[in-house]
Image (tube, rainbow, N blue to C red; front, side, top):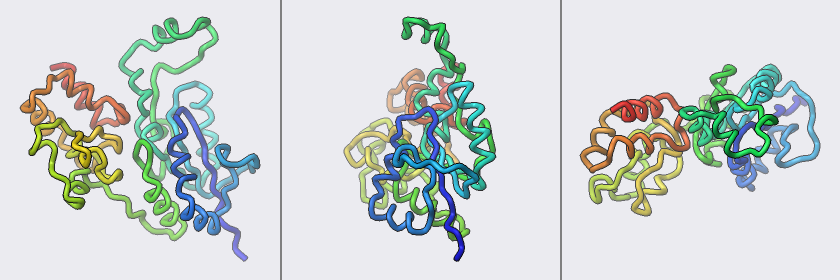
Length: 258
């Protein structure tokens, strides 16, 4: 009998929300668990088995010297490495530090800053090691994660959309908040995955799933200006959960310079 693929789940700097999305899959997770052996998952088990692993799921960004070394070890242990969530794929909300003086933060926040050892920047996993697939979202879509795992087991390309959130608005019949209400929205440049949740409640998209496959951030920036947004407001809009994704980073910095 062929051994089942060994799966490991690793955490770096993050809120654990993407790991919880895996646990929240419930019935679907039971089906996956029959096809694989989840041998390392500190969030869900007390039993931790050593590598090598067939599939490694990594949540979180690299923010410390220790984690910069640990991700190298994880990469060597995993035949396939998948990053999950905005922190792992784009540095996360903590990447806002990348434009500020981290030493000043440490001095202000901690009573004994000499004990704090941290990097100046929060960076995605792919800036440190080769990554086989990035699953975006803050948090990730649990159904997309199950699809990704099943695709890896079947040896096929995962059916994960790369088009914009606007397509999801159209499919669910949601009226465009930009056109109809003049609401600032990142939907045209944001990858689908959440089901266009915010526009369905008459709110603009916040860009939780990061840049779509070919984001025209320049065109959107111009449209946001027409809606009355200042360059500072537009820059701040691009600097949220996926601030360090290069397309959003470039757009925010151009507005900042303007």
